[in-house]
Image 1 (cartoon, rainbow, N blue to C red):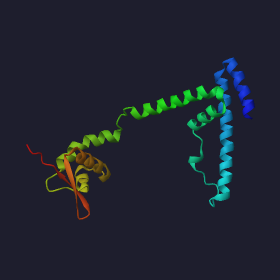
Image 2: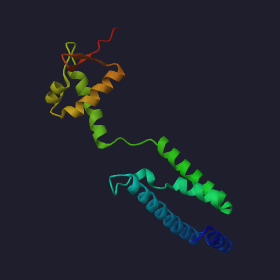
Image 3: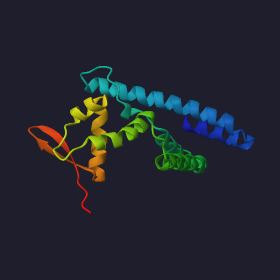
Image 4: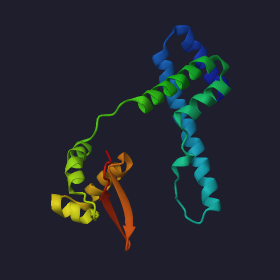
Length: 172
């Protein structure tokens, strides 16, 4: 389907105010264009690349690129495409700023933090010893200790290749 045919179809559908049909036709056309571009990219890569059939995700066309191309090629749809891009931006911004509930593992980790803090001494303790004392995996103790260091409740020193965590004495 050529751009001229596409433009005629779009104008007809716009007159009918049948946006669902128009969106379906656009989606179908864009998928067809994607597959054609994708096949061309693979053929080019196969001639230059010794690893035949290697497919890289960077070659896929994103929705943002798709709407940008629609805005460039079809002036009548520029406003519609810009609205779609703005909606994507708004959705992405909302995802970034959303407060996420802590996971089950994070909640368990927060519950262990006071127990780990109690086990710290002025002489220094290895994370493995703390993990054995609490009966948990070493990998669960390390992030807790890092949080305690960031909060200023503990300090870390490397002694003979191992990290030792010390309790920070609070001066009053």
